[in-house]
Image (spheres, rainbow, N blue to C red):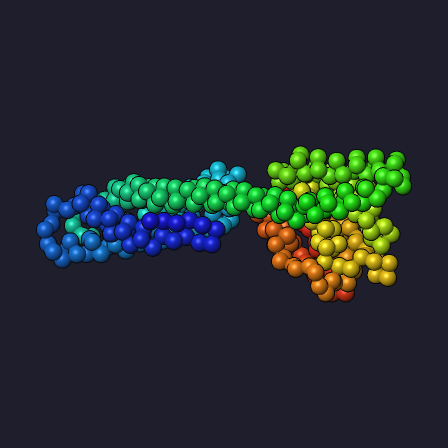
Length: 346
């Protein structure tokens, strides 16, 4: 009947049904229904009740929506309800005074003193606004609960997609095949370097096993993993692949989503020419509240199909976890800016 979400409130049917029902209850519980059986008096009473209920309902709804937008976070619920209750209480006092004055000026046969009528209106107003508030608060609570479940399921789905993408493309059998080929060539030439190569390759796959289910990790941990990954690629491309770091020394408070830097480096290597004539330079830097991964554009004209799945996956996961957008810019260079995640935001 009521659907509460972050874009608005769909309560059309609640208002269409709730207002007439409350009017009927007020008519049948009115203290003066036996004083006069005049149809004219009855019609006037019903008309006044309709006007009063609509005013109360709509004002209560306005206060609720304003307070919900003013204090949207769940941790602000207690503060929002306290302020909302105070505003509604003063609204009841003022509205009750106006209605009692109107009824006293245009009596319908009750003959009650002004103060007694005012107290009666206050009691009914408290019940009426209490009912309306409970309806909207329950709708808001269950709406947020449903939304949090939806976001949780969506995040799980994105995490699964990320893992599949990681296994299929980023740390793929093709990458392992190339690494083993490089190792076969390296073993007879430099046994000591071969041992280091095997250690780095082991580190890469150990990192995948340890962190493929994590949503957030320290930037320092991601960079250590990236160093191992880049080392393996430099054994293949040599000095044709340049990696430039322009990051602050203190990285303890900065978090990133696992494998995002590796995925961006892999994309740059996968889609661009890496050769002696056209070396590829990848720069990883901090710019404001972003970690920026940038490479010079020298796109391969054949042999590689770009689906954009990896970039879209990174973008979706950052929006889900941080409500921040990943910025992608294509000019003479290709750059992807990842929003920095701080400890204080978690």
